[in-house]
Length: 112
Length: 116
Image 1 (cartoon, one colour):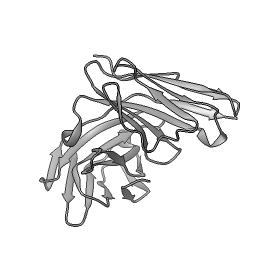
Image 2: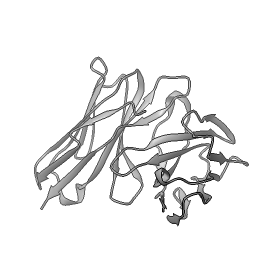
Image 3: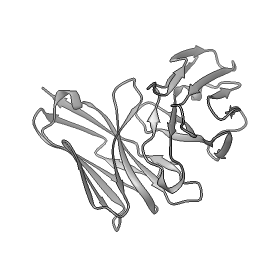
Image 4: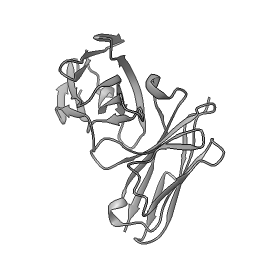
């Protein structure tokens, strides 16, 4: 079963607006990652935040992590039509297997 | 540097037929993952290898699915016999670091299976 949950399931915004996606997980983690997937393609890594970090930036991406609430958010600023894709959070669980578990994803549509 | 290579990209078979997917990870990546992705959902882990050892196959339906990574490099995932519900995308990923320091996973383009 999936560990992560994301909301919203789908998000439609105008080009130039900011997009925020949220992810929640159920057990302790070592890190949390965000991936992007264009239709019919594989997943591409965007950013990783460790369990002892609270915020991280990479270009137009900002990720926050709240381990007390077991949640993370991904903010894409000044969105572009090319940002249209599905976005997944993935948690590296603190288990004996060091399992990487993905959430169900948020489908983002950026309208030109 | 070549990325993770998967083949075939697309496969259509009749139910009860066997099917196999192949994955060649990035050179030097000791950890290899097979994930299953249903339409509109996130990837679900099937099996993880450290070199040639399957260290986590708890989610692999062993009655019909099997996997191998004999020389610790490329890997094959097999389904026999295939069922209608197996229609999905099978994703392979690799990473250079394992354990609690696991970072970025590098994914292939996936193998899309359609079972008729």
